[in-house]
Image (cartoon, rainbow, N blue to C red; front, side, top):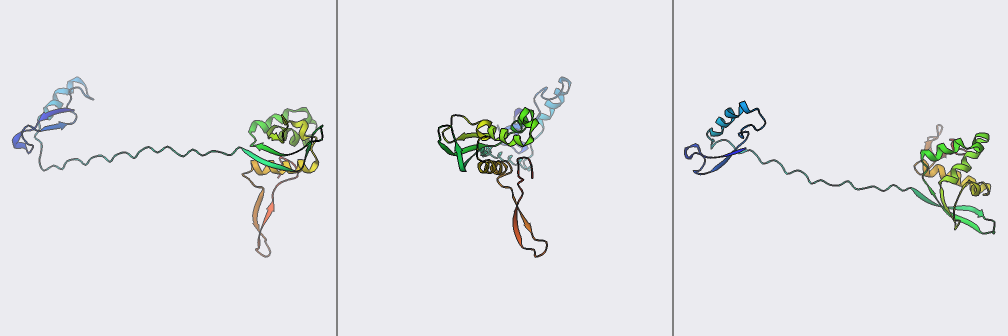
Length: 190
């Protein structure tokens, strides 16, 4: 862009500076086109031509609000795990399962021999805390009471299936709405 002095009779005040776009020699064009562009720099400025409207200011960039995904869920066992010393551990934390958590147990020999063992190995991977035990693993899960194991299987389904395993349905005979439990008897069933 080149600045030129406006002409007195052309509508601009004497000595006014007028910006003329595209008049820089060689700006955006080959060198052979530069003389033609500079000739247009001396075109008279019309007083009646409306001034171009200023471009609207860009909207300020707003950073999206970061949503935090809840990945750990506290629980309390109905009976509790009893360790070797006779201490009962009831309160724990389960984390969301990953695809890896569900795939790795399938390579376990115990699961290959007995598919029902899948839930024990899987729960041993996703329970991150149980009472004051230093570590939770599948050996602890397999020594839990059956009612606690059933509770954890259902809790796993709830946590990993958007928080619930119930669906709202309507009776086909009387049209009365009610909820049904979709959870199966073991992990992986529905």
